[in-house]
Image 1 (cartoon, rainbow, N blue to C red):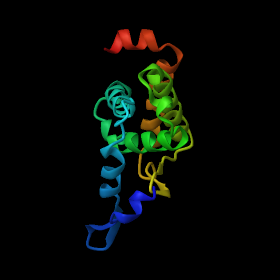
Image 2: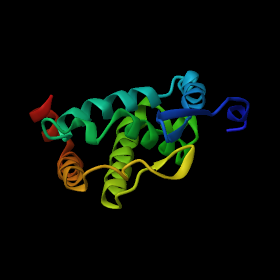
Image 3: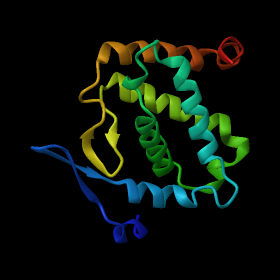
Image 4: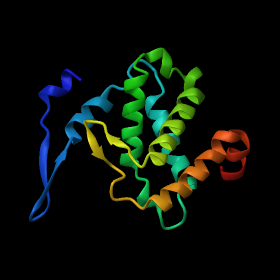
Length: 152
């Protein structure tokens, strides 16, 4: 995080009277060398993004976005900062943990933005759609092998 302090946080106009912060340069910095030691952080992110395609009901994929999943991964990295926790041998553990975290965030109707935790990225989302996503996440958590065989 110390390295991120030198990066700019941008203010972006969403419409004439609404502005929001952009942490794109900070995110880019975090992701730049995230797997430099041969870890599986980006691989975990790619797998979760692929799973999202089967979790979200047709026509509802915008309710759970890649940005939500990126923030889930950032929080996971915060709680599991050591490279050995992200070895390929621990890939299944990290995926399970990321799914658990996402499940909890949906149940609590709050996924905190990593760089500004008081911002809830689910604040404008339809919770009924997200609850359907939790039911689909539960299926993979209960029986991951069968789920993967059916969906991939």
